Length: 218
View 1 (cartoon, rainbow, N blue to C red):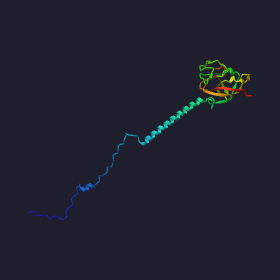
View 2: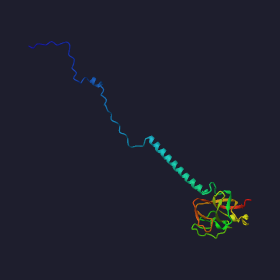
View 3: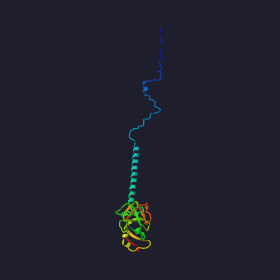
């Protein structure tokens, strides 16, 4: 016969083999990874807002610089058309009182050379230094070079048609005062002050105009 072994009233607790109960497994949280993968940086699509602002700023500054440069260029061109470099501040269309230094031989000795014609006024010689028209000091349209007492060179016509210059003139150098109406600016000219002298090119622009109401200072 088999002997029955007495059972202990204290049952041994179930051994934990590492699997645990279902409730325990559901309550456990997985451990977070030590490193997270970075999201890839998008390479397509519109630039960020800051980039658009920078591009707009550069475009505006470039436009302003171009506009400023054009303004300076056109202003300089207009100034050269209205003012002569040889006489600062003398503007085309104005009339100024000038005092010119002369000798009586200047009537036939002085001349200028240029191909430009301004308001019907032109030099007695062309740009090739050949006579362009019969020289006559009494012509009101033939330009001649004159220096003021301030050593300012200008081109003018009509001086010798003044009544006070038709009579006897001083033997030495003298001056006359005239109203000089400025009609234009000559950019390229050559001048001479004696028939035997060679024409000398003038590097600065010169005023061109007519002389009227000329008088000898008393």
